[in-house]
Image 1 (cartoon, rainbow, N blue to C red):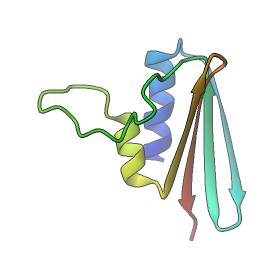
Image 2: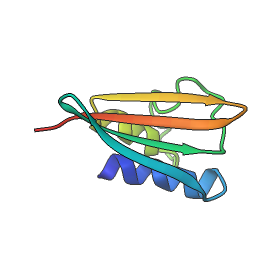
Image 3: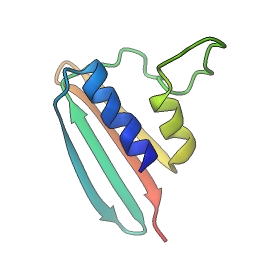
Length: 88
């Protein structure tokens, strides 16, 4: 729930406030996908250590720490983030 909230908050703050949330089960995993019109230029977003005095920009890093797998796709069409968590 925290990881989904962080990614949804990124949609509100950085991508104009509108997006689509989809949730489904895939085998033993729960998958939450958030798609919006924003673009992420850094393919390693969320994988860099935080700077000592950063007050924001932690959502993707938190998602990477909490989820079993985070998939990030971004291009001219927008951004899709899929969060995979083993259920059970």
